[in-house]
Length: 111
Length: 113
Image (cartoon, rainbow over all chains, first blue to last red; front, side, top):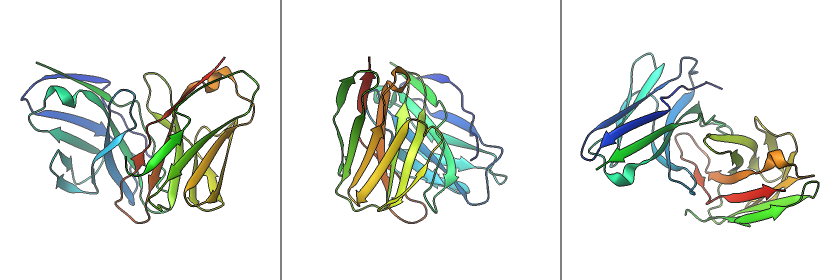
């Protein structure tokens, strides 16, 4: 399973764009990159998933360079409610889709 | 939350006693997972299931066993609870196919004293 490396913590202010980068040098050909968000006392919640290039949905964008050894989660115009832990996962979605959670990035949004 | 229920939500038990946690889903998803999360850390996979009676070990399976006799239920058993198994346990489900997300339960906070 590919190991991921993320910053332990980040601070931002309301209304700013936040970019969280994840390194996954050992990503395999059939691995997807998935980001989850977790609030205290809750289970993680899916944000976005991609394989290559760029993916965008209503809450975030995911940028993946051609070599796929890293990825960047972009949160536009964050609010206080975006304060959470963000996890980058790399793993196959076929079979059982075992993926490894790292320690995540704690994002704190300040007013 | 995507038709997934964990029970109990909180439990305190004594060292050496067996404990069973239940994960129940109403989504008919093929894959089910048990994770544990310790303070300040990410989730670690204990066991997972890819169908009825089909299970496999994750990265921290020692001291745990699982069973899946029906699609909707995935049970996690601590054969003889230890203080190191004090943690928050999360169940997750996922449907078949590529590019699918996992849905997580609300967690079970287990304290072994």
